[in-house]
Structure formats: structure tokens, C-alpha cells
Image (tube, rainbow, N blue to C red):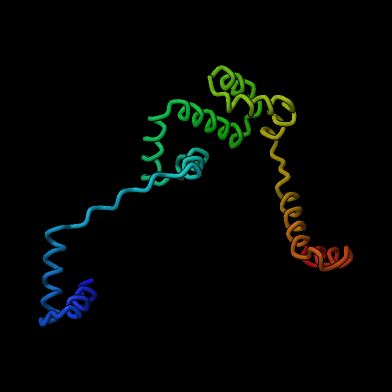
Length: 171
């Protein structure tokens, strides 16, 4: 910064040397230290990520920001509690406790979650099985995504036989 300032004042006729300008800029920096820039407000995506992430995986700063946000909005705080309780059901495979969780959510005045609970209730047996059993369709979904990606890459370029060969060669 001092060099750029020196070049500007030299163009305007300053006869002195660069070291004088550097010393002056150094004294200015000491006299007026920079404050930390104001922190950018977290986005909705950030807050959603913090709520759905395991609390142990939040940085200290993120945890503090989340606590401040939840303290300002009681409805969001209750929503976050329900989301974390559901995450515990999933992680601990406690599908048998889903009914109690659904009752607590329905008893709370959170219309956004009521729709989710209604959707879960429409196929309750499958949801309980998904939360209880150790089986997962993740591997199958991964293969489906891979095939769809190959198909998108080949869009309009070839026929089914070539797509079939590419899929079989990547397996």
C-alpha cells in the first residue's frame, strides 16, 4: 500500500523518497489499527446445515452463531430440537420410538413439521422398518446415479447398445 501511495504522490510532484512515505504509513497503521471486519450474516443454507449436522461437528464459531439464532427464534429452536431428536432415532435405529416422536411434533405448534409427520404416517410401517433395520439401499442408489450420469453424458450421441457397453465396462 505504501508503494502505491508513493507512486501516486510522486506523480503529483512529491520530491521526497519512498522510505519517508513508508514510515508515515507505518505510523498511520499504528495510530489507527484495523478492527475485525463485521461478520457476514449466515445464510439460510448455513443455518440449515448447522441444525442438521451433528453438534460435535460444528466449529465453535458456528455453534455460537447457531445458539444466538435459536435464542432469537423460539419456533426455530423447537424445530431444531425435533430435527435432532429425529436424527438420533435414525442414528440409533430406534424406529420403535417414531410414534412418540410424531406425537411430540403434532403436539407442538409447528405447521411445517406437521406436513412431514403426516407424510411419514402415510407409510408408517416402511418408515419404522427403515429406521430399525440395518439394511440400506445406498449401494443400489449409487449405481443408479452412476448409470444416469453416463446416460446424460451420452445424450443424443449413441444408441442403447453403446450405453449398455459403457455401463458394463465401468462395473
